Amino acid sequence: MFTTVLMIEKPLVPADVELVTTLHGDEPVSFVVLMQPRGDQDRLLRALDDVALGELDDAVRELSEDREEDSPVSPAERALQHSLEALRAAGADAVGQIVQRHPLNLLASVVRETRADEVIVLTAPHLVEEFFHRDWASRARHKVGVPVLKLFAHGEE
Image (cartoon, rainbow, N blue to C red; front, side, top):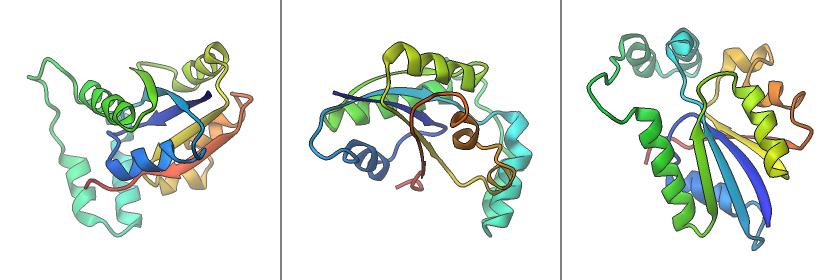
């Protein structure tokens, strides 16, 4: 079985599930999903990315977004659960966790502990971070010791 550590920042949509579950043909795949929600500290970078991509409505929403304080289940937990269920429905084994702190240290330890074959970073384009090689995939390549594939997530369907 092929083991993939999958870093995501939002729930997987069906096109993303199909993409990651078919990358290795018919070989069975096991996923360890690390849900790294983009926090408040990234809000300005996300707005700049939206402006650079010509998505002005998204940029305004990024800067004025209200958080769901009342919900007992965080948006990140819902996104992780949804993603795990979608991967399992596609026939893959999948477990996961929310990244609380130090995402790259956690990634490296998960790769070691699970003896993962690869890391897939599935993210929206982050032009500012990518330009300066501060995106997850660029930084992970120096830490994990396995191939790191960067894929762009599909929009909401």
